[in-house]
Length: 114
Ligand code: DGP
Image (cartoon, rainbow, N blue to C red):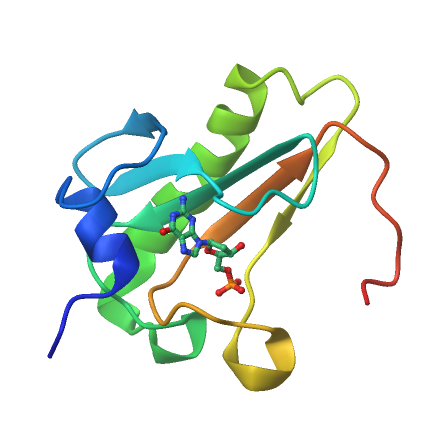
């Protein structure tokens, strides 16, 4: 299987603005920001999408969410709030088949999403 663009970012094979990493996840700025702050938090393990996550990913998924909140706070988003988004499949708007959590903030975000 060929590497996803996010695996290449994680491996430093292509450049990106990495703002956090640990043994399980990596966070970097989205190349096409949809808000003043737009960061992607991805597991190092190439789980294609949340629908493909397995019971063994339990700890990884918990870690991902806790780190999303931590990274959002580090980015100064905690006082005004922010949104976490995980797109799944064509109708969900998924374009990269490597699980990622969008962290969006810095402006008021409308609801419902488009
Ligand atoms: P999604 O549509 O949920 O699969 O989101 C994929 C996001 O990935 C999208 O907001 C743009 C971002 N993206 C795609 N290619 C790159 C890249 O090469 N570098 C960075 N930093 N972000 C990328």
